[in-house]
Length: 456
Image (cartoon, rainbow, N blue to C red):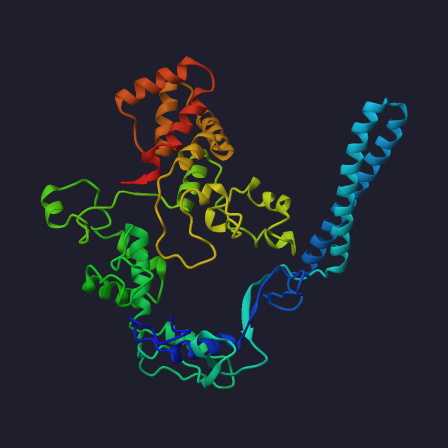
């Protein structure tokens, strides 16, 4: 709003927008995979010394070229074999072979193009990252009158939000972009806003609702905090913990409030039907990432080791909208925790997208929570769920649960963290005994159950 005019509700004038915009206008963003794109050569920030990781980069680059050459040799060999076989074939069979040859020709052209592109690329250190650095040209931004880039007003000196007063905040260094001073201003212990926003986000993540329900909006049109004193207390604890999210989470999770169950209470419900004062836990579904990780953990397939770099980098400068074959490799055998899962804006995997994963192109503090038929269909039919159900069944047998009774108990322990009731044990034991592979189906039923997907 403030880009075009003074904000209608919150005390943010247009000058504040362009004061901060000048900082980012004076900053150069480094992005891409380090290769040559269609429009420009993108660079990344090397980590460590100039030669750091270059030998490994050369080895990987050579291997990629050798792999492509091998694919090309296989293509040429198969083409020659088909051409030779055509001499002894009838007309109908020759037509089929000609179609295969046409496909091989297309594939050969694609491989030749890929080889040519690889030969032009220079191997670079694998220890690189997207980052920001000072722009060669550092200056203040000029106001764009009513947001029109062709109508420029006066230049605004780089600075911060005037409504948020931080004592002893350093002014922007005129010879630099101002990113350092902006970071110090944001993370200052005396900034009245940052610690409260962070504390509220942590609380929302743990409880399902924030103390300020509109976690993205602390302005006039946002909700008032349900418990201002609690928010202030948590904000002071964030600063006291040296801005450690882990330490703050630990303090909250050790509290009595976090340990409450979701059982209803008639008296409390009458006094606070929306549970704004946290007299019980919210009954809520796992986030998409937690649900995927829980499925992999139950099946014994979760790889908890951190990912080494981004697999997207290995794809090079491809056109995401057109070259879908390479993108499939990112999700086919990925068993890493979801926090390490590569996310491409227009190719979010179904295991996350269907369960209300955040839209990657925008900032999302509070996700939508939907219950739609596609979620149930995914849990019934997706190859991912069927594979993990099979892995879980094999894990149960491998761990020594040989009788149907033991298998049911182990399946409940891996998924729901409890013992089955007598009725559940009797029914599922009979089901397993009725025919082969029913243990796989039982595992799928438990993975798809509401009790597995929801927090009590």
